[in-house]
Image 1 (cartoon, rainbow, N blue to C red):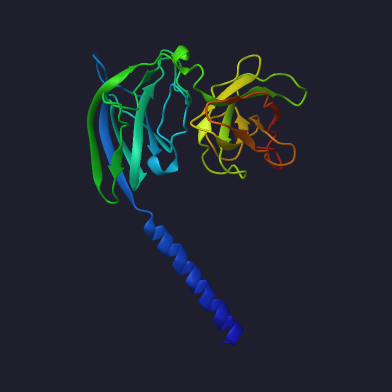
Image 2 (tube, rainbow, N blue to C red):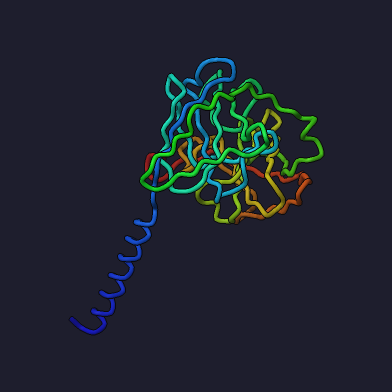
Length: 265
């Protein structure tokens, strides 16, 4: 083996060892529990929202909707089991009587407040190779947005989403990312646009955000027929927001994705 070949071989071995080490560092554990509706039975066939503490601020449905890091469902008795990366999590739960749509809460949805009676946020620590039991949480209630309480305290971005012809698009969600690459999970999401195409994206605090519009909540590559758009002409344009203020007039457009390659699927 030549000297150059030997050096390349050693570099390759080191890279593979690094990848293996990083893979070994990802430890997972289990979180289990049961949710019940306050004064009623179990939260059957609901959703459990899990937010990694290290990824962002605590969830606060009345002021903003943070995108969960993980979502699992409850069974007929309101029980759930989640396999999670080791760490500390905030947790919430919800259910839409009218369907399984995912996204910001709407009036009439069942939900679990993100804090206990003392105002402390729910936190659950998951350790690798272990099972953490949350027990039975019987605090799920009906959600009703308190607009009066929010007025003057929101930090948000607002505008209109249109198609390429300038026509407002209904049913679109706007997602906020903290990096211009806009890969992985976004941090916040707006409620769906109405017939006028207007959106209000509420965030936790001031900062720089990059926006993407889609009509599907899940991530990944877009599918044929899905609406996609982003703020910025040739590249993602930053939107700077100050805490306690709403930046208005952030309008942008999108198109229906035609698919990739032959057959465009």
